[in-house]
Length: 469
Image (cartoon, rainbow, N blue to C red; front, side, top):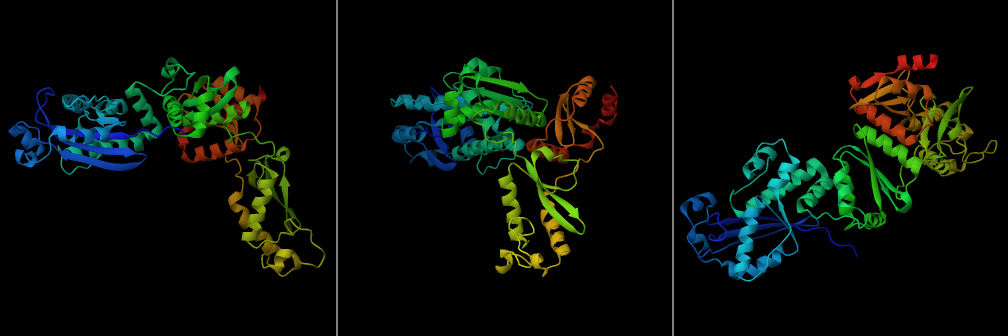
């Protein structure tokens, strides 16, 4: 049974002063995050010493509020159990930790949790931010607080900051920073710490290898180090990630200019190296599409195999499917939803003068026997397939998409490669278009929707030059 996810305790205390060996705790507030579930624990504490006036004004905690409250000795056991086996998170954590450690020591309890300081976390995640005190975090991140300088309210602020970091950077990045700050990252047994330290916080593709350099898994990320560490952190709770971590013997990576470059490289490497843990993005030798052909005043639909496909150049292709089975299932489902004749679509052999089976069960409007005009039926076929229409390449020739120092070169939905200068662009164009790839087609379509026109380079001139060379 895999270990549970870490349990986090967001902690804040109020005290009578700043010296742990002399001053005492007046309040403890804890907000616990356990598997996305939140619980609270708090208590006022009788410090047994006078609370200075300036502290009373700052915290609002007066002697009258704590006189009848338990001493630390009385709540020590319950408090220890509340913090036991949790990662201790506090702002200026040394302050809160040193006070609690000193108080526990006075009653004979050893207190040594794993500690995360949110000041250090803020500095790592927001290096350009000038200040990192709690009031600054409230202002910068729009955190909400009811009673500033009360323990549970300030502990809740830390959790809000944690949530904000998770939204901005993602859970993998946050877990990576936690491991870094703890100084004890969870790594597979055969992976050296030095190798992990070399991983850059940049976009690219990473490759996990098993023994004998056999590729196990290939992935991409905008932050290579965080993503790789995310795999190892997830191995504590995810069976597949645990299996991967136990088999990995080496890690390699290739940096790219950005996310698009990483996606393209990941797709190509998976198809070339066929890593055992990758299921998606495998090369399909059975790629096919439906083609609508006009014969006189009627439409005929036929399945076009991989060898005949010229996506981007053919204006009558629909679908693009990884297999004949997927193509047939999709068309049959469309036929049933739209009451199309499965006989005319080729799923059933029609006898002269007889209707298809679907007509008898009201799943066909009768185009097979003339009840519905054939032209209307063909029009409905075109309308039903419209969402699956394969787009014609919208440019007169090849294009490049700029990303950092790279230019990704495409022609008729095919990815030719990436270049960093004109000579490399010309070389890619001279080599010609590679085999059409459905995953690449989807990536390019999505990229063109979000890429500014200023980052799209018309390569028609280069293509004409390459043809003459």
